Length: 184
Image 1 (cartoon, rainbow, N blue to C red):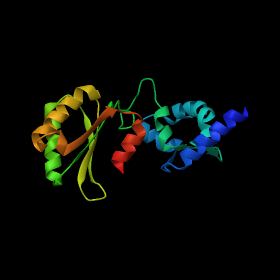
Image 2: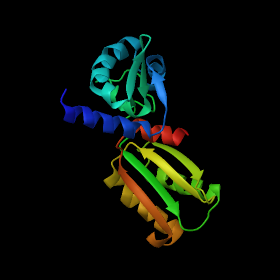
Image 3: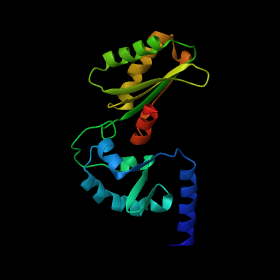
């Protein structure tokens, strides 16, 4: 390995060490990903060789330990069992409001979004920020460009106009991280 490549791997490893520290073993992935242990064993060798220098996967005592941000690398071409981690989420949605609203108010907004997009499946979480104001995170199986106008219209109806809320609706970058965030 060249000195440049070694230095690059050291930088990546140090950045990865600063991130959230959640590790899984292969047995954990069987249930999370809906993939058989045998299939995971086949996949892990290639992933291990590619990412071991980044500090996101290691082997100890014949057992592999995988950091949460590598979960998206373990995918079957044809998934057998659908789980939240193996489902094809396409949109990462989040909105926060200028004013404080009750939990039921946010629940009614979410229900309105679901009613206006009946063919779309959502995974959602309502949580308080540091100041106690509630905001919403959602994953959806439709494209952001299809959902953003619908959600903006609903938020405008509930909250007057776009000056009273912030909406983030973008493609899912890392499925496992997004799901872990919703499950926290």
